[in-house]
Length: 183
Image 1 (cartoon, rainbow, N blue to C red):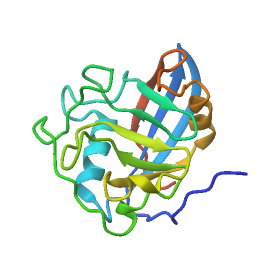
Image 2 (image 1 turned 60 degrees about the horizontal axis):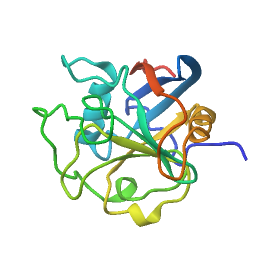
Image 3 (image 1 turned 90 degrees about the vertical axis):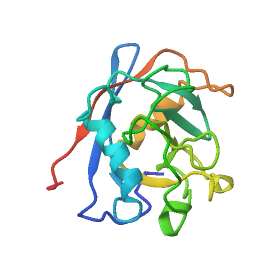
C-alpha cells in the first residue's frame, strides 16, 4: 500500500528534509512536516538541528543508530552516535515534554515523527520515525511531525535494521535543512 501522511499539511508549518545514505551510497530524501501549530518548541528544536544554524548543533553527518524493523528508526545523537548523547538547542539541556494534546499525543503509525527520551521531560535531539502502529508510546513521547514524502527511503533504512536495533552498515544523514514554503 502506498504511503500517505496522516494529517493534511498545515501550510504555516515548517518542512525539513534529510538526505540519507548507507555506507556512502545515497538512499534518497525524506521530507517532514513539523507540527509547529501544536508543539512549537519541540518543532523548533528539530528544525534548527536540521538547518545547523546554531554552531555545534546539527544533524548533518549523524547516524540512525537504532533501527528495529516493524517498529522504528532512531537517530539524532550527533554528539556520541550511540544513543547516549545529543543535546537540544535550549542551552544544550534537556527540555520538558511540551504537550500530549491532540496530534502531539498520538503515535498514528508509519510516518510518525516523535521525540526519543530517557523518561519524562528529557527531550534533547534524539528522535524516531515509526514504521508501524505504536500506541503504547502515546503520552510518553511527544509527536511533533510526520513524513510528507520519501517514506520509501525509511522503508529501505528499516531493511538494514535488526531485532536488537543494530544496523547493517552506517545509515547517515548526508544532507538536511529546511525547504521553502512553496511546496
